[in-house]
Image (cartoon, rainbow, N blue to C red; front, side, top):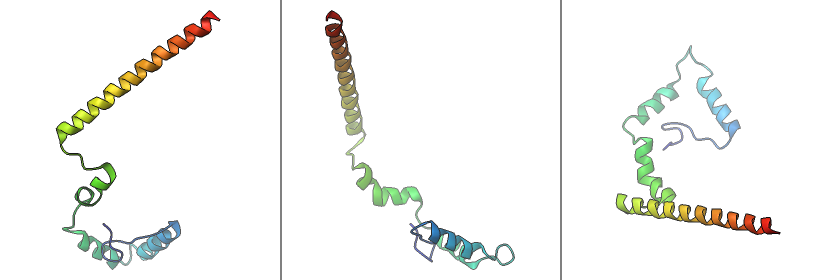
Length: 103
Protein backbone atom coordinates (compact mmCIF):
# COMPACT_ATOMS: atom_id res chain seq x y z
CA UNK A 1 0.00 0.00 0.00
CA UNK A 2 1.08 3.56 -0.58
CA UNK A 3 2.65 5.47 2.29
CA UNK A 4 2.45 9.15 1.43
CA UNK A 5 5.90 10.61 0.79
CA UNK A 6 7.65 7.30 1.47
CA UNK A 7 6.89 5.02 -1.48
CA UNK A 8 4.49 7.22 -3.43
CA UNK A 9 1.90 9.94 -3.01
CA UNK A 10 -1.72 9.80 -1.90
CA UNK A 11 -4.36 12.09 -3.39
CA UNK A 12 -8.03 12.72 -2.74
CA UNK A 13 -9.17 14.23 -6.02
CA UNK A 14 -8.06 15.10 -9.53
CA UNK A 15 -6.71 18.53 -8.52
CA UNK A 16 -4.40 17.02 -5.91
CA UNK A 17 -3.23 14.41 -8.43
CA UNK A 18 -2.51 17.10 -11.05
CA UNK A 19 -0.52 19.19 -8.56
CA UNK A 20 1.49 16.20 -7.39
CA UNK A 21 2.28 15.11 -10.94
CA UNK A 22 3.31 18.64 -11.86
CA UNK A 23 5.63 18.94 -8.84
CA UNK A 24 7.08 15.52 -9.47
CA UNK A 25 7.78 16.02 -13.17
CA UNK A 26 8.29 19.79 -13.60
CA UNK A 27 12.10 19.57 -13.84
CA UNK A 28 12.22 16.39 -15.91
CA UNK A 29 14.42 15.47 -17.83
CA UNK A 30 17.03 18.13 -17.02
CA UNK A 31 17.06 17.36 -13.32
CA UNK A 32 16.06 13.83 -12.42
CA UNK A 33 13.65 14.00 -9.55
CA UNK A 34 15.04 12.51 -6.35
CA UNK A 35 11.50 11.80 -5.13
CA UNK A 36 11.07 9.20 -7.88
CA UNK A 37 14.34 7.53 -6.89
CA UNK A 38 13.31 7.53 -3.22
CA UNK A 39 9.88 6.03 -4.05
CA UNK A 40 11.49 3.38 -6.25
CA UNK A 41 14.01 2.48 -3.53
CA UNK A 42 11.32 2.26 -0.83
CA UNK A 43 9.14 -0.02 -2.97
CA UNK A 44 11.82 -2.70 -3.28
CA UNK A 45 11.10 -5.68 -1.05
CA UNK A 46 7.55 -4.66 -0.18
CA UNK A 47 4.62 -6.97 -0.69
CA UNK A 48 3.01 -6.98 -4.10
CA UNK A 49 -0.65 -6.20 -4.76
CA UNK A 50 -1.73 -9.84 -4.66
CA UNK A 51 -0.02 -10.43 -1.32
CA UNK A 52 -1.64 -7.31 0.17
CA UNK A 53 -5.02 -8.39 -1.22
CA UNK A 54 -4.75 -11.88 0.26
CA UNK A 55 -3.58 -10.59 3.62
CA UNK A 56 -5.77 -7.51 4.11
CA UNK A 57 -8.88 -7.40 1.95
CA UNK A 58 -9.82 -10.74 0.40
CA UNK A 59 -11.80 -12.12 3.34
CA UNK A 60 -13.64 -8.82 3.78
CA UNK A 61 -14.64 -8.51 0.14
CA UNK A 62 -15.32 -12.07 -1.04
CA UNK A 63 -15.61 -13.91 2.26
CA UNK A 64 -13.64 -16.75 3.70
CA UNK A 65 -14.62 -19.85 1.77
CA UNK A 66 -13.79 -22.99 3.70
CA UNK A 67 -12.25 -25.03 0.90
CA UNK A 68 -12.47 -25.91 -2.78
CA UNK A 69 -15.05 -28.68 -2.20
CA UNK A 70 -17.35 -26.28 -0.40
CA UNK A 71 -16.95 -23.75 -3.21
CA UNK A 72 -17.87 -26.38 -5.83
CA UNK A 73 -20.92 -27.46 -3.85
CA UNK A 74 -22.12 -23.86 -3.57
CA UNK A 75 -21.59 -23.42 -7.30
CA UNK A 76 -23.57 -26.59 -8.09
CA UNK A 77 -26.48 -25.49 -5.87
CA UNK A 78 -26.46 -22.10 -7.59
CA UNK A 79 -26.61 -23.74 -11.03
CA UNK A 80 -29.42 -26.07 -9.89
CA UNK A 81 -31.42 -23.13 -8.58
CA UNK A 82 -30.92 -21.16 -11.80
CA UNK A 83 -32.03 -24.13 -13.93
CA UNK A 84 -35.11 -24.57 -11.72
CA UNK A 85 -35.97 -20.86 -11.90
CA UNK A 86 -35.55 -20.79 -15.67
CA UNK A 87 -37.67 -23.95 -16.11
CA UNK A 88 -40.39 -22.55 -13.89
CA UNK A 89 -40.37 -19.25 -15.80
CA UNK A 90 -40.69 -21.03 -19.15
CA UNK A 91 -43.57 -23.19 -17.90
CA UNK A 92 -45.31 -20.13 -16.46
CA UNK A 93 -44.84 -18.25 -19.75
CA UNK A 94 -46.35 -21.13 -21.78
CA UNK A 95 -49.28 -21.46 -19.35
CA UNK A 96 -49.92 -17.71 -19.48
CA UNK A 97 -49.73 -17.69 -23.26
CA UNK A 98 -52.15 -20.64 -23.45
CA UNK A 99 -54.66 -18.94 -21.15
CA UNK A 100 -54.55 -15.73 -23.20
CA UNK A 101 -54.90 -17.71 -26.44
CA UNK A 102 -58.12 -19.39 -25.29
CA UNK A 103 -59.82 -16.00 -24.58
